[in-house]
Length: 425
Ligand code: PMP
Image (cartoon, rainbow, N blue to C red):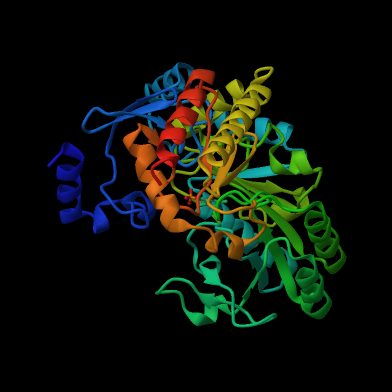
């Protein structure tokens, strides 16, 4: 038994499934999760001291690489002054100013501690602002684990959703309508029939929780046009895409101004920090200014703010996203070429520092396309890459993340590893 196996057995005795978040357990790919001992730049080392090129980066936050000196030093310096006060600090103002500067759609912003809190609060705010109950989400988009968002599509068009988790009352999910991503006609029909009862539409403006799926320009334009026309708020959940696909996030790439935006992951630089913000008239409805309640003991935590500010500082250095995007595109192109040469039906796509690898002939447009991909082959590829020292997300439904610490040599080594792995799958 190696050390990872030993730790997994030990973990399972006192932690459900041995993990503190389900996908870490390797449930869909099988095998033993790697327990991380330490990380540096593009790499981490597991409990058996094996090194991996890491393409998860803590599921997105590690865009400047692991243990980047400026970030670690900022957190250490903040820690010397105390860990948490439950009273305002100057750092919170500075990070709010930075966020509002980088995202013109955000006039006011509130800090929270997780992406789940950010989306849950944004939805409550949208309901409080509009006085409406119904919300629209899209199949395959993940917005955290709050009750009204753990909902899957109902049996037909315009039927409200069903809980996708035990413990969510059907009464909660009956306010959530689940539509198909990139389906403009279905969206237009929905708004034509019940548009005036919809509080908000929430989406991942580039989806990363059903592998990487890009929206069509028509879909984005319809979302903005229809919500505006019917007085519903448009919420861009940029917890994953925020500062990942570009300095102006997905909304900057697409030139769309949402009413509310949620951020997480990169904005906290690896510490528990997330945010929601947007139009000042909407944000003015939150306590203590307005009737929509929202709060948090650790919200705006000084260590998290320090890590976030240090990270936002680095990503604004000239050329950061050009370099990151070029390396990520090179990886996606290299993986697709390796698959072509091996005669394996696999393609790849990327945007900014985010990429998708799909065991299908074409790049998927919606959740159903991803479920139709060859997941058995993905699982074999995942394990072959793991043996090669390359750590991909342990699920065919997840996107991958590249950091600025991934060098051209790391990318080339990964593509070489993929060539060997693809010959075995
Ligand atoms: N929204 C999106 C788009 C996400 O990708 C995630 C997490 N992967 C969340 C919300 C939830 O964030 P957290 O895990 O920090 O609660």
